[in-house]
Length: 116
Image 1 (cartoon, rainbow, N blue to C red):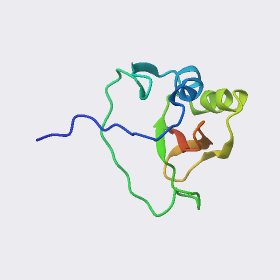
Image 2: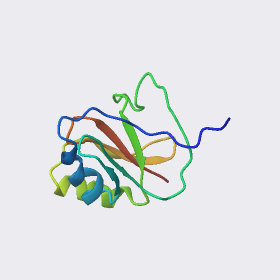
Image 3: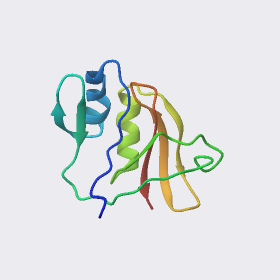
């Protein structure tokens, strides 16, 4: 048996509110829309990871989700311009990532990062 995919599922009273954050700003594609559930993603091949933590590093809260991007500074600019609340960073961390924390439309703490 091999794990082939992990999907994060978040309760959302209005799933359509995800569009600006995940599709318009981050550039993910709407893969499935049944009204009651909307799934965003990318056909990019990704590794499967699940993390468990006591903190988010650098004395931050543990984020609900981490999203790696190819250009964290552009992602930061786009999130700030769209009015999403930035809660940390951008910061260059001693473990080799540049990142920032932002709240999505449902209050989830999202860690946007790039490896340096």
